[in-house]
Amino acid sequence: MTECRVRLTGIILILSVCSWSTPTAGVAPPAVVCSGVGNTGCKGYSYQGFFSDRNDCRAGKVVYPTTEQEVIAAVADGVKNGLKMRAVSKGSHSLPSLVCPGGNGTGVFISTRDYKSITVNVDTQSATLDAGVRLKPFLDEAARHGLTFPHMPYWAGLSISGILGTGAHGSGIWGKGSAVYEYVKEIRLVVPASAEEGYAKVINLVAGIDDEILNAARLSLGVLGVVSTVTLELQPMFKRSVSFLSKSDVDIETQVAINAQRNEFGDVSWYPAEKLAVYRSDNRVPVRTPGVGVNQYIPFRPIPAAAVEATRLSEVIDEATGDARAKCVTAAAQISALSLVGNGFTNNGILFTGYPVVGFQNSIATSGTCDDTNVAGSGCGWDRRFKGVFAFQNGFTVSFSNLPAFIRDVKALVALNSESLCVFGLYAGILMRHVKKTGSAYLGEVEEGVDLDISYYRSRDPQAPRLYEDVTEEIEQMLLFKYNARPHWGKNRVVGFATTKNLYPDLPRFIKVKNQLDPQGLFSNDWTDKVLNVDGAAVNLQKFGPYCALEGNCICTEDIHCAPEKGYFCQAGRVYTEARVCRKVK
Image 1 (cartoon, rainbow, N blue to C red):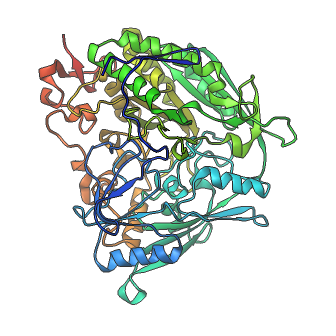
Image 2: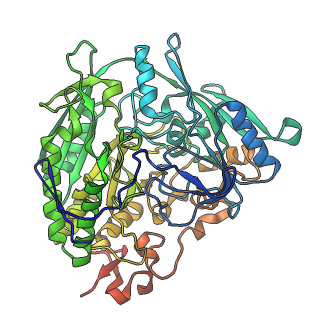
Image 3: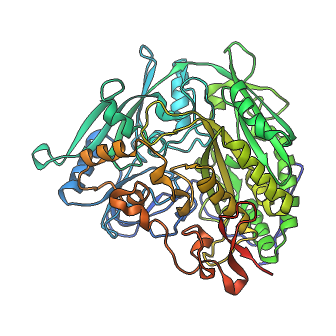
């Protein structure tokens, strides 16, 4: 293949002529692929094609229920035969090994892909969703009845059961806050049962009545059973007015909290290397306010395989040649391009003509059409069929009280070498979404603060070190051990969960419910046992061995955990000196 490079100039992609591994169909590949007859001999995939630990995710079979009775039958069969089970959504958007059944390949995937009915009750202002319902169809159906839901994760491809399994959220600290689990009125959960009860049963959990169990089911990690339906409280339809302001990050330490107080749905994107902060002003306005704006975030739109492969190859070349400066140039161009096109927001569904963008909640709250495109050779940038985006994606919640000191530490890293942080600019910066302390979920947020979404380059070779990987590792350990950050359950590398067992005061209450509903642990797997510290399993979370720190499967303690033959040795952090990171030593 000839060398291919891509650079963004304004809003134009400039591509050289290359050969491409172009897929023949546009619709995203399935989360579960089976080689045997009758959906047997199956392997599960994350949306990127690998889970964060790169372990194989295998099961004996997959079932695709379309009704609650079929969910009950699937669970009953698993319980009767003593099989490990895990629910998996159509898109499988969690990077940890959350959806993988145990049982050494004999377990069962219970897919919610085809279980997706929606019922809206105008009188009670609520909606009941089957487990596989995804966000945009839900919002659009509620809108037909003049209703809407206040907070949504930014990616529309998530399912409601996946959201509750991982605690996914939008951005905002007003009212009940931005976590979807706070708006749950009722959950129907299919759980193991005795032989006399038919091996499976449905329990109906109602807010205010069954809170002891419901507060575990609101954010369940899938270890309690299979969510059948969820009833959410709705609100009358409203519009939102959205604007973005780019400015110096000189005072970002104080401005993030101010932005959270002023904006019901605001957020902040921080580009440390560029010393730039992008503040999102986002509030509800009356439905009579003119505007038919649409959130069409560019990275979530269908993208030609050629474009995403060229972009990826460009960064692979930068990594191979150690050209951090090239990453900085590309990042600056991408940031500028996103600004010119309103960060993907359009005023009329076609073009961005200026701020504010005003639109109905169902058109503004969430975005993502790339995994449903039928255009051959196009799809999401991370589509595993072509060699596009492959990245670590970390999420950590930091309290408002600790955030200023964390920002100052990152700025100190920038002062030492700004080029070492340009990688964040290639992945939309550090997104800061505002989160509120939970009023219900045992495994929900325990403090008010910001969720930091941090993505950066990952090699397809697990033994290949990354350019300036010591900096991202130092930031990760800084968050975990210096600032007591809490990991997003559906993101992060293995080491991101190193402190989980100490972060949730209601963890014993959650474990009590788990043991009550699933005493045999049929819905648990090796990963959930470790992050929940079941029977002390957290001690085995990290997997030490050659190259283990490169993938985040361990925090290095010896040089062999890095790649000493390639010049990467286990060293102390530069700002947070307690950190142990893989650094290239010249």
